[in-house]
Image (cartoon, rainbow, N blue to C red; front, side, top):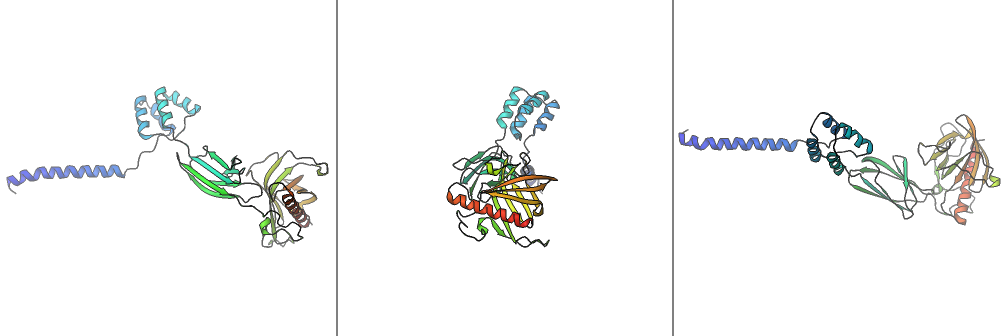
Length: 321
């Protein structure tokens, strides 16, 4: 290679090498994931490690934070050396919580997140929630006389998720009125396989929306229970079950349970209520079930609920023989 050629080649080689290095560095930087926002503990460690407060403020503005500023958090940060200026910067960077908007038809429905009751939709059927943490959750909507609605939702910080639930009646109003045959499947009775235990129970399942009341009440005097829990009354495979809408919760001793029908004595039926005596958790107790198969008031709703309570009373009597 001549001297003249070398003079031309060297600058071109240097330029090519420089461009190659820049491209490699840019590609490496692009391949790196974005740094995660600071946690509260990260900020405390920086302050406790004698990093200047101004430098900490610069860092949090660059990367953001993933925590809320509560009184407890603020106190901990101040003890670590946070200034008013840093705390103000942190408040500006607090991530907005996810927003969940639930609309139901009809209104007045109970809303559960991961089987924990949160609130009830308005009479117009709307509920806005900003207290649910981000992530995947199970949403359930329940209303007496209607089938539960359930769906999985994914909530993200700063984003809004809207869920619409058009609830379906658990029964057609007036169905079974004036008829001697049992309520059909649309009225809360589902066909089920006979019990493998050889029980003489009919091969059907009673599944009725309603409520369970604890304690003793003389129904003939029209007394009222103070402690009532909404849920679902189920008679199936030789058992009486009550599935409380307040999952996992107990109110004055009334909660979800299941007992063999052999331990249940049906005492009486009074309109849409059935009083019975049973052994529950080693004790003899009285429970009264109020059937709300058809919601609302009026002759048709009352007649359907009375008919359903009669079905429940007969099922409890027949199963305990």
